[in-house]
Image (cartoon, rainbow, N blue to C red; front, side):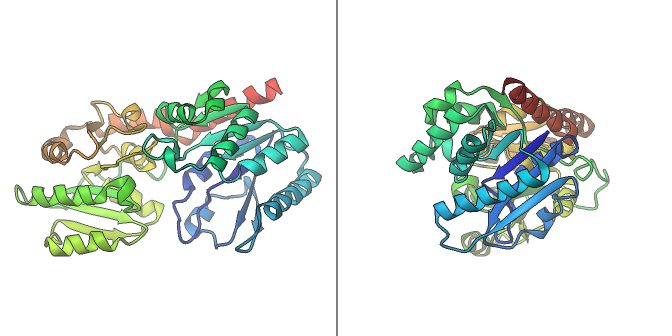
Length: 376
């Protein structure tokens, strides 16, 4: 089976997390399909994520210049697909990862070459607090994409419902839930022993306050520092946030909060293994990969009841709080600090492997492909 993958998001040096989870999903089906990625770029690829594109995946980059028109982009993709067909044969499926901005390209290729279209969506734009940002033109494009789609997959039922509430044509598209993927060979239990004298809390994000409410976390940590001193918050982040740095300095929180900067995937895993629990205080989410990675390392999470997070959480692996409720977060941080060692790490990991391991997700995606090709 030949699958043409069109990722709207792709990791690059400025944003190394921009669609890395898409590459992980593609990699799960690469052993069982001829997986061909076509993606245009103006910027160098992130070297860490480039490692995901191994010999099992055929990568056909299209190098463009800033200011390239949509028509020129369409022609570039069309020309590249013509070359692919000559070399590998006509694709059996087009898999569009995130409907915009490549929806127009996927539609054209699907119609021209009579190839079924599958859409996998990850974008939080459909969430109620964000959907007003969609322009009329974007809504029209989404309507056409979902009219053409033979199948829609999302990482959570919450996101599926948000899409259907935003784009009416999506309600008639057959649906399958396919979670994000975790490399369970990297994200493991690790060494159970710890040299840390204080409890280790870990937060991993882009420090985007609108989505992640990082300032809310800082305010709660400041309050917590007046109550107890047996903890440290370590923050892994790809981008700097001057407001965050200034707050830590002004409130003299340097003994409690450590900004660790960018880390490789292996380093993220090591930091999770050395932590006591993962902290997220997001205003909106779909299905954060870092929470799944925490589970695979046997670590519990403290997070908010937004998006798809309640779908992955249970009493064995999580404590959830309402978004923006800083009083509740403070209370539950105290509880988690006191009880984090009572969680069964092996049970947390085993449950996570059953849902998020590469082989599990690969089978789900492959079943989606087989379903669509049988109907074509």
